[in-house]
Image (tube, rainbow, N blue to C red):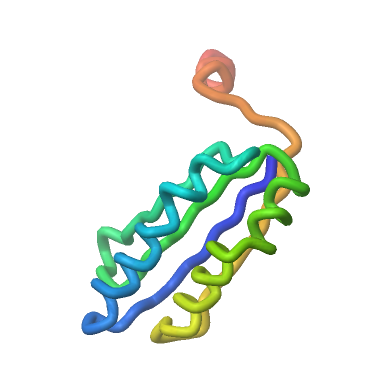
Length: 107
């Protein structure tokens, strides 16, 4: 699995337009082959900070998305950020859930 994050700091007067632009691509991205999750989040302590989170089944699926017109729209949104955006890619080798919490807490 590959995780893509984009952290944007937006000016208050640009926030609504940026939200609209990102929301317009979330639905189409979420149904793409290999997309496991696509969502936009807001920092509860800083209204100017938005985080786009995407999870992809494979590197190839993510790369296909990066070459798409919808990702070009993300790049355009990045240009409207108040500060330089932070973009990160994480390769995940394994995944655990509540069973790991139980294992750790039970000693």
